[in-house]
Image (tube, rainbow, N blue to C red):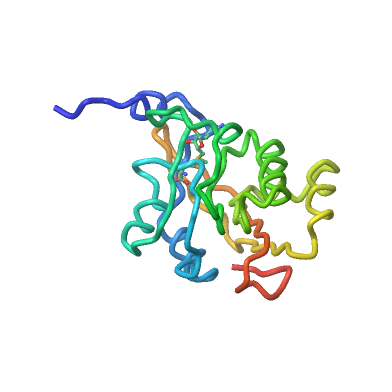
Length: 179
Ligand SMILES: C[S@@+](CC[C@H](N)C(=O)[O-])C[C@H]1O[C@@H](n2cnc3c(N)ncnc32)[C@H](O)[C@@H]1O
C-alpha cells in the first residue's frame, strides 16, 4: 500500500490547493518558449502538478518546491535555484499580495530574471497591487484568458477568470494579450 505523504494528507484541507489543468500549462510553455530557460523554479508545485510533469517530459532543468514537501519549502523563505531565469507557477490566490511583493523583491535582488504568475483577474484591482505593477510596467505583459479556467481540487472544482502576469519574458512583445 502506498505510504501517504504530508502532501497527500494536507492537500485535502487546503482551499488554496487547486490544480492547474494541463492545457493551461502547455499553452504558456509554448507562448514563452520554455525551452529557452535554463534554470526554472516552480515554487508552489509538487508531485501532481502539470507544471512539473510537463517539465519532465521536456527535460527542463528546474527546482520544484512546495510548502507540503519533505522540507516544508515555504515560498517566503525558500531561495530560488542558482541563476534562476524563470519563476513560473499558480500561487495560492489568498496570499497573492505578499507573493507578488516577494516576486518583485527577487527581481530587484537579481535572484530571478523573469516570472509568470497565474492569478485571478482581480489581481488587476486594488491600489496595493496596481502600485506594484505600475512600478515594473516597462517589462510587464498581461495575458488575459477569454474564458474562465476550470480548476480542480480534491473537494470539487471551480471556474475562475484569470490572467498571467509576466515580467521580462523575451517572447512577449506586447503588454496585453487575450488567450
Ligand atoms: C493554486 S495551488 C497550485 C497547485 C499546483 N501548483 C498547480 O498549479 O497545479 C497553490 C499551492 O501553493 C501551496 N502553498 C500555499 N502557501 C505556500 C507557501 N507559503 N509556500 C509554498 N507553497 C504554498 C498551496 O498549498 C497550494 O497547493
